[in-house]
Amino acid sequence: MNEILKNDPEFTESKFKTYVDNVFIQLHMAVVTKELENIKHFVSDEVYNKYQKIVDDLSGRHLIQMYDEINVAQTDILGYRVTDTDMIIEVNLISRYLDYLMDEDGNYVSGDTDVRSERNNHLIFTKKINYKESGAVRKCPGCGASIDVNAGGKCAYCGTIYNLEDKDWLLTSIETR
Image 1 (tube, rainbow, N blue to C red):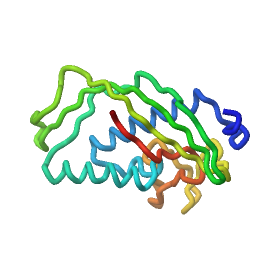
Image 2 (cartoon, helix red, strand yellow; image 1 turned 180 degrees about the vertical axis):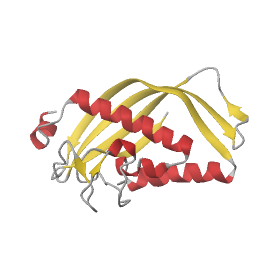
Image 3 (tube, helix red, strand yellow; image 1 turned 135 degrees about the horizontal axis):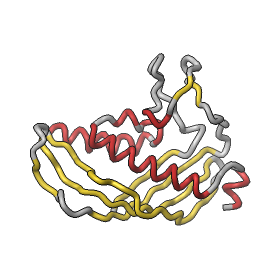
Image 4 (tube, one colour; image 1 turned 135 degrees about the vertical axis):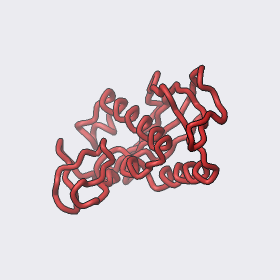
């Protein structure tokens, strides 16, 4: 982790793992609510587009993907590397949740509503080496108002999306096994 600390002196493993868990759960809740714009600032365009296709497919079939009782059982850093432009951390996250489909009227369609599925998730987070310090209070690039990135990263005043790409760790890949 010395290379990461050299480029990001504020980095701590515990804070990073908490952030990873939060992004993972918010991503899955965004699929349930079909409100992916709430997580757009946490993920790369590739991850966003991948999940948008999932939501679009479900919507086209009038279905809702449910991830009830979702939790993160374990988060482990598998490795890290630094390139000329980025810091990259690979993570294995073990999640548990009830995984089932409902129709838009709330009727059960398929899946398991009684036993939680356990999944291994391989995630990659990337942060620019020349990231800009964002400070404890994040400001809207559009109007300067304070933004709560955990509440969708969208400015309540002007509607600008706060993009974390140049400021924080961005989820750039997720594969579930």
